[in-house]
Length: 263
Image 1 (cartoon, helix red, strand yellow):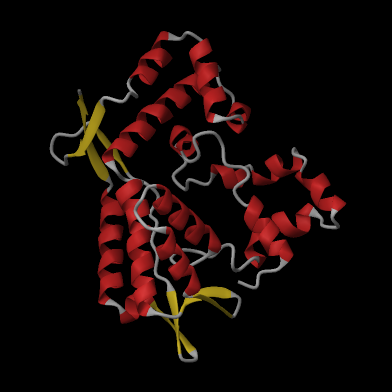
Image 2 (cartoon, rainbow, N blue to C red):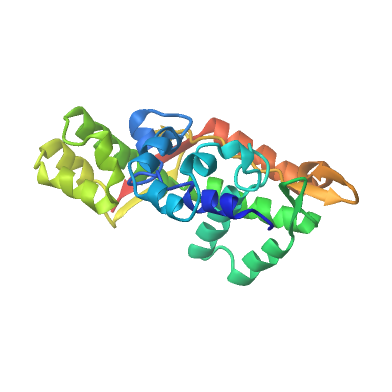
């Protein structure tokens, strides 16, 4: 999309500080902004081989990785389009068989750059992406079974930290390494929590008789569309996009009520 080599480097490395279990650490720490990986980004980069590799090819890591706002294709405030949101939406939804590779490629063909920012050139493309995005952040992130798994795992991680079995530095290891540390402690409370995550557990949405109520970070999307020489937000020209956004906001603010059903 015309991004410089520097912006492409920033894009490749922008999530390098994600911890084991990704955003579950935010729930364990009570971090509502879900940005722990951003808070430790500079520390992780400086403690890695990345600065040396970049220097070898004539780039300085501070010029590329520490000043994110200048990369306007990579990051934009919600509800705008950016490479980060497009990346995880298309990748995850393709991985979970919600969209085809052909659909993803067709959407990418409709992306254009205007004044350094991502736009779409068709209303129908905006409607498709908004629907796909909400399949991710509402249908998938807020799926009752995912909520249950994240809830139990975050309780496990928090307890392990409280007991000083895990440190924050341990979260820079892999998922399996973190689980191995917990299991090797032989702590009965931790073993009990981990035993609650298994193949036969079920979960359903139930606002009356619920075991868990969780509110995720509010994630909304409203792609800008280039019509003629001007930019309009998709919700201004598509009732479908407007309604999807209103419904997503309502559900995000209310949160999800989950009833656990064990088989």
